[in-house]
Length: 423
Image 1: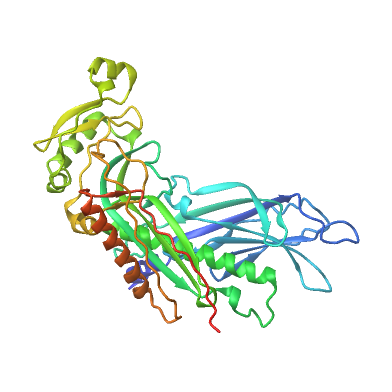
Image 2: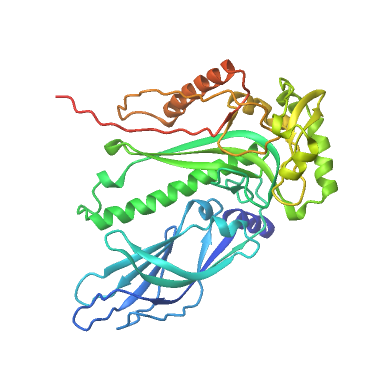
């Protein structure tokens, strides 16, 4: 019974978030009578709030607190942002807000040393930056034994339009997307009296939360597809007025490996294994012979003029032009599609990155685009919005096939909200 209770506790509380508030500098004058500020700090994560002591009459306060600890559930570490609110204490009136700091905890989950410290700018939605605060943040994680976990700790999400520096591209698994709908606090009453600052702060908190939740969902899908990273990741916020907010995200699921951890023999072994896979053969099934341009007709001239050499290689029985691609001194790995995700990739062969290893690029067919107009009535469900984007993606696939191509590079989705008034 004791073992069972301990196991359930680990599933419910996989980590502890720790925060220390050290000091502040450059605070604004909040008390005009003596040109000082009586500052204190509220640290919030989820529904838990900790508060420092009041540091009187100073624009550069020093608290040097002990650790404030928060018991964090699994998905909350990715969904929630750490909120640090700096306030000015008033004896006979309501406390005044100096500003806030929002800290995304996701980078700490992937770091070897799960602790950061430094000066964070304090931002107020009405007055801009109002000083800085020195904070120490750490995370302690328990062993992840829950096979039904809702998080995606082991998935790195990159917003870069190319392969991250220092990473070798091992495999491409396919296109991934997700969307979340929410009401907009801008069109709701807050405590019956809505001030601009209160509305802005509630919106900031909401945007941070749903952005983190969206990234977690994207990462979970990437893990199910067999990848360990998402590249070319983009988030879109669609503001639909009184109908609410839609946040969308998409990217390309890949398998990456750090170049410093790869040996040449290991890269060669993975290249041979992927080149013999069925998905790889399907990917290069329609590859035609490519003739290098005249200026590179001499191999010696090519080698002296360009570090990346164009040459002809026999890939799965097909002749194709391959440009050797290197992120570092470690040779790149030949790409292929994993068998488990081949169907998913075949449905939407979209790559959200704009730069790829040139051994993948055989020829360019042209630019493809599709658009649609939808009337928002206020009763749309997330399934309806997924269906709208599916229509456009299938149309893009049709254009791509008509051009004789097998994938789309630099894919992105944009939406414009227009308001029409009928009298």
